[in-house]
Length: 353
Image (spheres, rainbow, N blue to C red):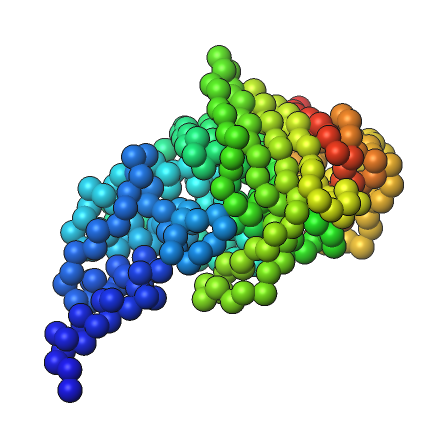
């Protein structure tokens, strides 16, 4: 019979503990061990890299916050504090967690994410910064937050989207490529590490370029209920994002070995109402919808509005009201465009007078 110490040694070599940093930290906390997790120069700790996902190890915000709290309990406070630069970048201008960052459509509940963030910042003795910037070119991640706006542009994904753009009380909660059918989380977003990445800081704003694979369904059970694996979709997206204060321009091209008719480009947005072509008003949680030629779309809020315009490369669009609950990252509307190979979308914001 193995002694308690021998059992601990045998458990310490378990493949599961090598795949799951959270489980490893909990085990080390119970057995008085000291973990040695790799930490990037910018402070974040990549997670689940040995689970053979096509995107490798990523700093999933919920698990990253939990790990930071555990590291403090394990006596590694300085390492935990260095994680704050990234964790700050996962919050919006209301200092609430961004629900779509490295998060699939079926993911961690928003309330759990909020608790994990609050407990992390409390345990390291810091408050989230109101104004914050963060750039990691290898992830193709750029975050810029001010008192009334949040913009995150992202070129690496785990069947997740390309970022957020929020102004006051309206905005885009997530966006990215989609393989039909519309609304399927199994085939939405990016599924890999960004390649051909470049970033440039402008006098006001930035540009980000990247190429990545488009997500597709895969049957593998991952062992993580909030993470689905991705298959090879034979679809790629090349993107160029330009941000200047309160405006975002997206230039993109979809290519690959499957028909363009299989692809959509979708936005999941937050708004009290959505007005198509200044005339057709849609409300959340209603059965009304728009399907037809491409038109300008105004996202209406109490304090501001945001205008989406497909400048070129889109032939049809749909606007579908949603429930605004846990599904689709809490969005009120889904906007789906039918793209040609190359397209250009312009998003601008306006204050409500």
